[in-house]
Length: 124
Image (cartoon, rainbow, N blue to C red):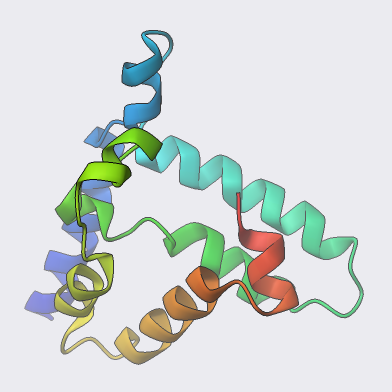
């Protein structure tokens, strides 16, 4: 139970994690949680328009795709050019020992590989 509570607390930290693209551009602002919510709504709508798509999978990918950023922070396209961020290891550590950990790692990999219809719909 302790690991689950820690996971939920960490997921809540995304509300306080800023997206750095806005800072880089010098305008606006959005948290990673704000972005994930909007992306989840978009993913749901797009998947409902594709009869072959597994809408639940799209929604889960959208909802959890940036979860590792609770540990790594958000990196805009310029930051990514100069820094090496290991989101897969961060996620592995986040979900270790959780009953849904294997599913989350699988969804994360599928999302990042972008080979399936669901992953392509989920990509923002």
